[in-house]
Image 1 (cartoon, one colour):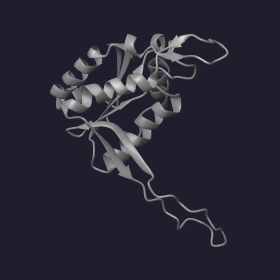
Image 2 (image 1 turned 60 degrees about the horizontal axis):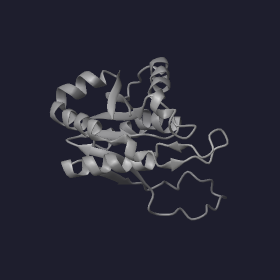
Image 3 (image 1 turned 120 degrees about the vertical axis):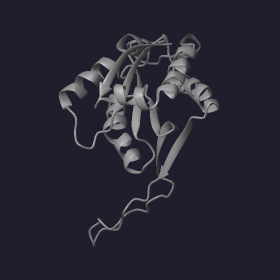
Length: 189
């Protein structure tokens, strides 16, 4: 794979490269080492492309796992204890199940990395909510979001979002006081 595009959200590229230059180089080497052709394993069941062989997000995520974990990157999971004191006095909630959590795909030296081959809402959530939450929990200082460019997303199931769409929205959204610096990398096969 290759990095085809880069967007700096809240000065993310400059800050991430300055503070984490060696691990960004390591991350870029891992991206370049991904043989995407081995992940073209998903047979489409969609009406618009029945039987077509597509890139599998699950297989791509596994490759990133296999490349980054041995280099000292780790997943970080935070347990969620949901509050119950907001319920009305006359409301009996069904039992809140334990075991809820939020997870960052990869963390190393306080840099958080999310690899997203899913729906658009997950990209926005990662950058505009999850990374802020993990920053507030003192897990990360900055982030990197890795997403497909449109040409790559077109070779996946319908509904997979892409770099160009994501960047347009972030540019028009603007930056809030709580946003952390995030480097967004658009990747292609």
